[in-house]
Every structure is written in C-alpha cells, then in structure tokens.
Length: 94
Image (cartoon, rainbow, N blue to C red; front, side):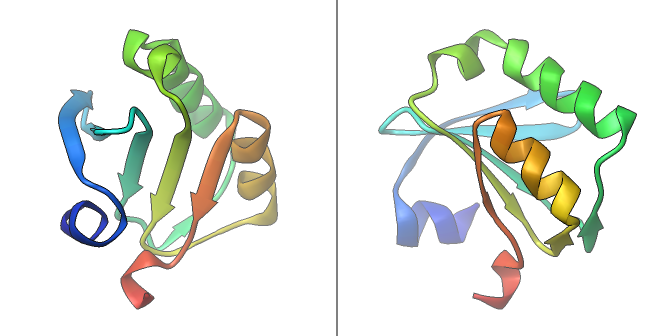
C-alpha cells in the first residue's frame, strides 16, 4: 500500500471488508492488495469479489484495481477482468 500511495497515486481512505483491506485513491479508484503467493479462481473467490462489488464504496469507484504479491491463474485473471478489475501481479518484484 505504501508503494502505491507514494509511487502510483495517493490513497485517500482505507476500509475493511472482513479481513480484506480496501483502499480508495484520492481520484476515486478502489484498490485491493492481496498478500498471496499464488491465486486461483474458485467458488469462494467468486463469492468474495461479488460481495466486494456489492459494497457502496465499490459501486462509487471510478475504477477497480487488484494488486497481487504473487501470480494468478489465467482463469483468475480472466474472471477478475470480467468483473472490471485491472490486475497487477507480482507487485513485490516491481
């Protein structure tokens, strides 16, 4: 989050949905950071993202971004894109 705030654009607010931090940038983008080594798509992942998208802050977001510490399966990338997320993988290597 600190890298994003300093190098990409300032974050304005941080919320939590369960144990998932949801950041809103000052320009209105919703940004989710996942400290995972490898992400796959399954029924649980689909439910989590549909719940996140139902939040009022998600519905007001100008864009949705998902940053992963590790890699995602092609299916996870595809389904996140279908839900309108811009996906960035391996952020700790950048």
